[in-house]
Length: 137
Image (cartoon, rainbow, N blue to C red):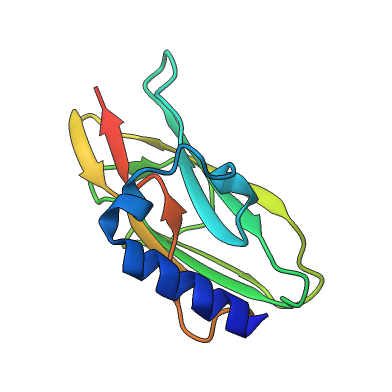
């Protein structure tokens, strides 16, 4: 399995940025193994929901996720520290799930959001896939 993944990564690198930018032919991001972020548009109260789709592989036994929310946002739901970091850890019996947290800000703009995760299937922490900006109006 690792050999297949390495070959796939080498093919993607060989195709250049075009393979990464044009993903219209690819399967829905939420079905990929790993963690995929989905930022939903603000609701009528200005609150923004962010979904972290957690999709472990068949041999994954744990996950560690750290999401860095821009300081301009107040985290309304979800466990977080004083630096606006959301940390999720599961060490047994993991399964596919979606973790949702809600945000709000009084400062309109577009903000970068980033995070990383680790599972058995990757040896190091890797960036969370999917949406990487939040737009507040």
